[in-house]
Length: 375
Image (cartoon, rainbow, N blue to C red; front, side, top):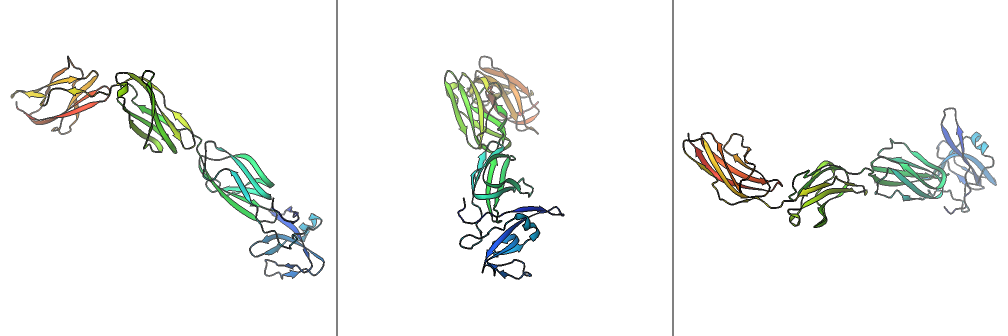
């Protein structure tokens, strides 16, 4: 508590006809004390008797002067109390505010925030929220030297200024800014959803304050593993991708899920995808280009591919000479490792690219060169 010999000022709140509320206090001066008034139209005075009593409305710390009050209101105070300490000095010391919580730039995962505040003297305590407070002071407690209770605030950053006002009108302000993030991250989808796993995994999520993203994967035979993913950004419907070496799990089945954590410690796991077969081996093409043969006078071009791949998805070609090149299917299955098929082409020169893809998404490509169709 503030150490001073000052006596407590009696305060009376008078409700005026205009419905405003004013604070008055009675000041007792000793003989020889000078009384300075803030209003230049009121002549300063000096107490010439043993004791002089004045009704005051306020005291200006900077100018060290008083604003006089209506004596009718001070009459209700009873005895007029001494406003001076043993050194005849005005109490100009503002209350000290110790804020244990909330912490400056603290991060909280609940909208209910504990105010744990201590004052070194009895005072009125208020706060104003610069972000969501609409410019209004909110009273925390009156004539208190401590306060411990919870208050509710909005998500995101809150910027509070606390104000303590003692009985002499001395004020002190202390700022506290803190972040509230009470919502868990949202995971919208993960890839692959089904089929095979080749080591490429992706996740779509929404989180404004992402701290980390990791993937958990494996099985009981070879073991479970996890990897933290770098480069995942905060925001709405963000996409993050990671490449995992699954060669230890090749031809086995695995499960996987993602875990997102925000800076407030909220954690969200994605749905676990089970029994995904692993294929990390790329298709092998044995015969070199060209893969095609053409007999002049015909419109058909014959293709032959000798491929090693247990889980073939498709073999495609793209005619780069077309007005709108796109991938078109040649084969979706192998017979004894061979894909043999034919396709018709229009007259003229054609530049062909080939792509072979397995069901896990492993793909190899090749350019066959150029041929000309005449018929």
